[in-house]
Amino acid sequence: MNDKAIARTKSQACGLCCTKLESLGVTIGKTEILKDINLHIHCGELTALIGPNGAGKTTLLKAIMGEIPHSGTLRFLDIKDCHTRKPLIGYVPQKLEFDPGAPISVLDFFSAGLSTRPIFFGHTSRQRDHAAASLSVVHADHLLERRLGDLSGGELQRVLLALALDPCPDLLLMDEPVSGVDSHGREIFYNMVSNLRQQYDLSIILVSHDLVMVSRYADRVVFVDRTLQCVGTPEEVFNNEKIKRDYGYVYQESIKGKQSSLNGHKIKGVSA
Amino acid sequence: MESWYFIIDYLLPFDWAHHTFMKNALLAVLLVGPLFGIMGTMIVNNKMAFYSDTIGHSALTGIAIGILLGFQDPLWIMVLFSIFLAIAISLLKYYTIASTDTVIGAVSATMVALGIVLLSRGGGFAKYSRFLIGDLLSITPREIYLLIFAFVAIVLLWTAMFNKFLLLSVNPTLARSRGIPVRLVETLFCIVIAVIVTISIQWVGILIINSFLILPAAAARNVSINMKQYHVISISIALISGTMGLLLSYYWATATGATIALVAAAFYLITLLLKPRFA
Image (cartoon, rainbow over all chains, first blue to last red; front, top):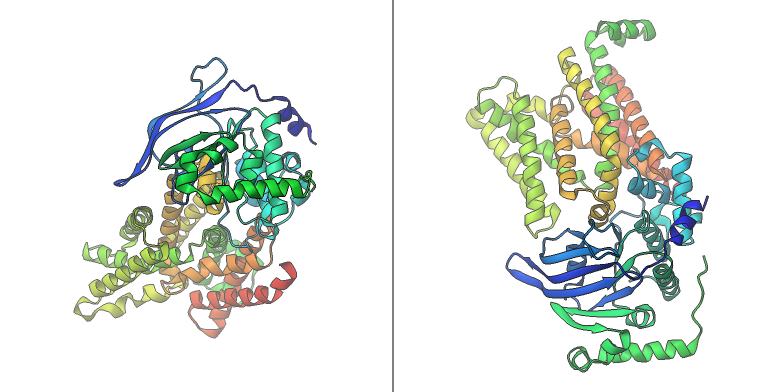
């Protein structure tokens, strides 16, 4: 049953393919929302996109996905450094827009995303096995028959993550995936994402306001406010003089928070 | 049609089934029921009840335009007008920052007012009141063929598109990341609803057409936990309330459409009471 999931974990990150953004800009109407974004995102890396509200983080994700038109170029390069194809993108939204009573089971949701066989006819056993295998990657296979509205915030985000990973994308984009989830759920989620980047051949871009988690798990932090303000390791960005001066105290606190939480207790492993 | 009449005579040797208009109406109900049962589930999922209501009400203006252009039977003009309106509403939704229900509310109010003004010119509104209430019993065999065609078209379209509609309804950006042309699919969905609602207006009536769409799905929603159950229950409720409503209206001598709507409303009430068991 887990064949598929296991097969996928074998293609490890090569660290050589990357997504290149070159002088990318977004203008909607007369408002310039983003300009001069130059970024290389390597596979096997967890890049956290941070910045104040309204800085254009979500817009950047949507531009990468092609939902919003952009200027500049966006290229996905494979090992030989030649443009091969459009990257396959997995996306984990912040939330879904359904009312809690909606009769959509986790299996319905998965089959809708993976096949064209209309889900009101029910599901084949192959679809069921496939969905269970995908869900087992995020330790959520026991949720298969549950209604989406009955899941906890953390469970729902894991289901969304599992769908985003199936088929395995080149680029995994997450827009504040666990805002509003309790700290235990956040811990589990970040742990999983952090493991993914070692097990799969993909690049991860994560928008987050949760700077404690970002400083703990991200390989690279990109601070965006209209344009790139600072790029580097979490320490570099949080200790950057300009960032400290302009966006100051929030980041100081987050680093203190990180230290105290690291001292306070060991990071829990994944349990489901 | 002859074979349908024969089957009815054979299977249902009752008084009411002797009338040809009842045979026609029964067949129409058996087609419209599942049709609306299927479409309703997605309309409720997408929170588009107000949209389908607006399309129904706007038929007044469609009728008026048809009459002004000199058509005896304004159906095709109404259909064209509803497609135009569906596209206009999708564009308005996209290009204005006002919330969707405000945009749709504004369109609805305007279209009802415009329709009434145009139709009441010279004090002749009364002759169009049949469109308000609808007359299922007046359905002709030719119109039934049209319904059969619509039914087949919807089943085919739903088979091809349903999963896309569902993903779109839970998160458009997620749908887009999985390669679904979001705006195209969304507009297509709006157009299809508009066409089916408009075709059915003359038999069901402007005032209650939305209850046909919404009530079976809303009732099914209360007592189902996955999409298969949702559809099976919604279609069953639509079929049962359609048939019951038709018979009750025959014996009570009431308007058929409204009677069917009332039976469907009763189902909604029952499922609402049962809901705590399924929550």
